[in-house]
Amino acid sequence: MKLRLHKYSFILVILFMLTACSDDVPQLLPLQQDDVILAFGDSLTFGTGSDSATESYPAILQILSGKTVVNAGIPGEVSQAGLERLPHVLAQTSPKLVILCHGGNDLIRRLDIVQLERNLTQMIQTIQASGAQVVLVAVPKLSLTLTVPELYARLAEEYNIPIEAEIIYDIEQQPGLKSDQIHPNAQGYRLIAENIYQLLQASHVL
Image (cartoon, rainbow, N blue to C red; front, side):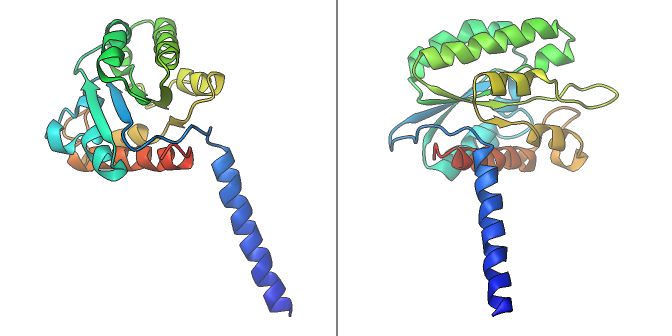
C-alpha cells in the first residue's frame, strides 16, 4: 500500500512540474490550418552559413510545424531598418504569428542599446496592431563575456509574449555548431528551429 502511495505521489509531483513549466510560458491563440508564420529578422533568420532555402531555421520550422513559414531575414540589417521594413512585409504576407529575432547587428556595431529596445518595442506594437501574435527570440551580445541583454526579457514580460532566450546564446558558445564566428551551421539552425517549435507547442499556438 505504501509503495502504491509513493507511486501516486511521484506522478502528482511530475504533473505539477509539467503544469508549472507550462504556466511559465504565455499562452497564445492556436493557429488555424492555413495560417502563415512570419520569421522576421537578420542573417540569423535568413540562414547565413547554411543553405538558407533548406537549412535555415524557418525552413526547418516549416517542416516541423506543417505551417507555411515565410523567411523574411535580411543579412546585415539593423533594427531601425527592420522597423521601417516591417509594415510592408506584414501587409505582403498577412501572418497570424511573427517570430521576431532582431538586434544582433545593433549589438555587433555597438549602436545605442536604448534605441534598440525602442525599435523592438515598436516592432512588437506594429505586429500586434496588425492582428498577429508575437514570439521573441533573444540575441546575445558578442564581447569578451557573452551575455543576453536584459531588454529582451523586459519586452517579453511587458507584452506577455513567449521568448526563446537561450538557444542562440548556447550555440554561440559551441564552435561545432557554427559556420563562422557568428553564424550557426546547418546543425545549429536545426537546433534553433527545434527549440522555437517546442516553445510554440508550450504556448499552445501549435
